[in-house]
Length: 315
Image (cartoon, rainbow, N blue to C red; front, side, top):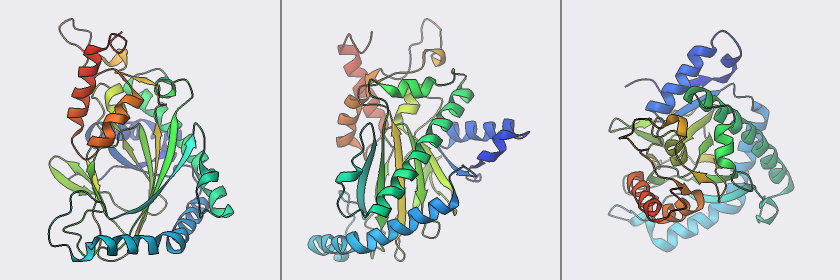
């Protein structure tokens, strides 16, 4: 098996720019994932985010999770659980309007740190989108504009902890899925592993690396690239010891953004049509909610059927 792609972003500034861009291109086309080092977010900030997230889990969420496990009798299950994930989560919304002030149990230091972290991730997401534009042969800013809609992109963070699980063979930390949105930036635990992606029919570990940011592509980038780039199935395997921290930030299109393959990437032969549908992102998300843990292809087909019925979508 090939090595998991690790991209040193600092190499974009010198003679190694070309091989680095090639590595990103290959990762987007063949993996749907890559890991970033020297990404510009300070190690000090990452260390504070990790410390405060783990403290918050211990103080406010660990007991709730244990009560949920007890109430559902999960420690004694004898057969595979297919409708539940072994994770403790909460969600932060940053754009277009933040909900940080409304989240209970966040002290001022944690709230301010997550705001600072979100600003750094937003800058990194936009930088990455322009690198993808360059590799795809699209004009700079094309992807950001495609995501914009009338109110700008949506951007939010899912903060997860995966506690030790007594039956990891029967309960997934997080069931296999592709991400619905745009570009995902993950700051994950560097000691407790568990994240895997599906490549060539095999589950491959995404290696924990200190201070790295893992990038993966969502369904919308597959559509806009007309299939050149792929969103891939991934999952989290629960572990028997150690609590795994996962902070996944989703830089997604605005709810009313119209998503379709970039015209420059659609083959111009008369017999061929674009492979992917045209739709409003919010409509895709409504469909995704019920079909998250199934393959993406039926979702694309369903949106194509809507497009064929809707003269506005196909205009």
